[in-house]
Length: 582
Image 1 (spheres, one colour):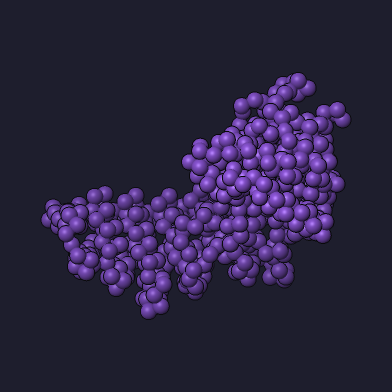
Image 2 (cartoon, rainbow, N blue to C red; image 1 turned 135 degrees about the horizontal axis):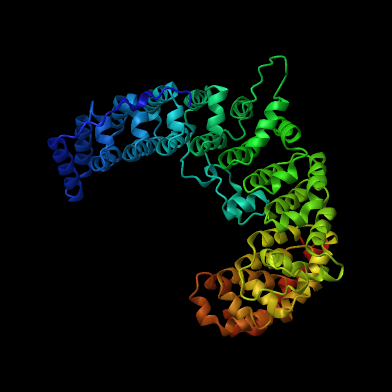
């Protein structure tokens, strides 16, 4: 890299025995728990004074660094800030050291605990400025260092006023992130996006960010593909969500398409740059970075990337190990029906190839976005049936094949493939089906028929699988006909007891109960009564027993029945007024 490595002149001085002894005595004192809280912060302050001028040596000493972390977490704000200001010139060097990085993290974490106090604002800001000033002087080493980059991400978060530990900043490939991308709400709790409890230091954030990005286009080429700097840039972008003006400045820098041609209005990607972006897309670090860019991109920027970089390459990128995640992000954030049309043309004819090559996430994203944009719904549902069932006779098997997507596509002779008993169901296949059942029932008859005509034992196995259960719940929440739902529920008779004992199954039992007529409700209640003792010992059991009023069913069955009948008739009136899928 073209930057000067002037951080490395820190020769480790040995820590003298006296210093070691001093700090180990303090550690022992704190471990003995004999120190009052007030006294403790005084001791911390004095001990921090002892580090002055030797911050680097002490922070990077494997043993003393642990004591220093304790001091930084237990001292007063003024002492903390003066430690930070005194060590600012060596802060990057400390942060890039294995032991030192923990000390740097502790200092920042400790600062964050004072954010709530309005009187602390200017002191914290001054401390942050002293660090940022040194970092922006030569940020590249720190960005590309496995320890330094982590400290840098925490610092960016602190400037924003959020904690680095909020999962939204990690965009992990978690089931939550997936569900969000496929607009399947897992629970009511997932609505709230990044909570920003504190206004942060927007000026400092901008200063630090522009410092990190002020490198040459040549250096940026390295930063894009370096594992650690890519993470720093991803965090920075996530923190800028919805700040379109700033995003329109920083994304072009990150993508190296800050046009030298000043006559061009707005964001513009030149052909040669588009080609470079496309070629780097198969790199692991860069692909993650582009995913985040697409997630936060303002509309004009998204459209330009869609047209200049991705159009005509969608399938080729979709079958790549890394780039397929970028395509999922691209699809999920599509803006209009015209873009839907382009994606459809390029990808729908290749659904089968995508599924065969294990790239079912791309198919899932396209189905989800067709729902959101209300475009190509019927075509998507049909294309998926066609990709999984080559002949008209096999259409009836669409459900089992999607539930066990990998087993089905992994077997040599697909015509002989049967159910895979006892195997774990395919997470993405099940997510696809959850999406399918959100469509209007006119589009998904083959899926409904296939599910309701499955053997009873297969339906029970599906309900016992944590991913499969979600498919059944999605079907029960769909606008399929009531008699089709009951047809499925009847096949679960005799299994409601054992199902209720499964964490995921108990929720399915509740959904079945809600969708049932009185006769079936009684059947469910009597099955739960049989397992009541075991059920009450599970985590979800007490709720289910209360919700279905199993005690009432046991002690006064006639009253229980008339109550259920009343609920049912209210529900029917509601459905005839509003439709059942509300």
